[in-house]
Length: 243
Ligand code: F6R
Image 1 (tube, rainbow, N blue to C red):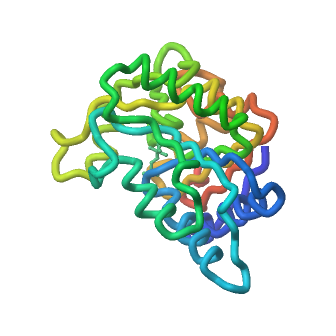
Image 2 (cartoon, rainbow, N blue to C red):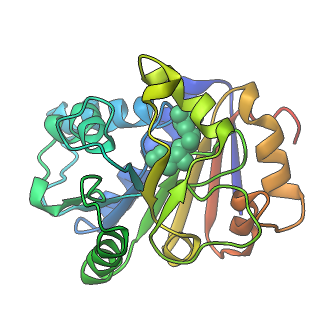
């Protein structure tokens, strides 16, 4: 495991964006696993700048992306859906073929169908070359919430009260936060060839410390990353405070 300690969010974003840009240059048809939330916004801004800068021209034309998760019940036009987020914060600003971008179908009421379909999409893409992860304050990755076992493939997750609380900042009120999401499972994440986890801010410090140095346990889902052969952590001083 490689850990980059950065001074702040901006440096974290630039460092992590450089790792993704390196992946794209080395393998222009990479399959990138992507995340939403506040952590990757700065990283995506860097990628957009490098794509639009004629001296750099980072090329996404052959890239495939597979997002970690989507809220159940929210469609692509809903401003809080993760499909909307990805269009707004990345896809609308780069030369990616949107038919090569995958987000679980939040409007599919049949959970088994939605999840099977997503596992098939990952397999058809040939697996994930580089998976980007944020970290929940409770140690979740994707929406794999703390529990008694590690969920395997894509599944419908019940969000814990702490995740609903953390994510209510994106909604008008807590009651509007969906209580379920379709999410890649731990097996999907561990099957990625490389994993890049980013974390910023004090709120992540306890979870990050437990994930990196505590026992591997489904109580801290991110702790499973200790067992992956190629993990890079890019985190700022505040998030690494306890490490
Ligand atoms: C988002 C996701 C979540 C977030 C995590 C951190 O697609 O899967 O695991 O990465 O909740 O969210 P932020 O970055 O908003 O702190």
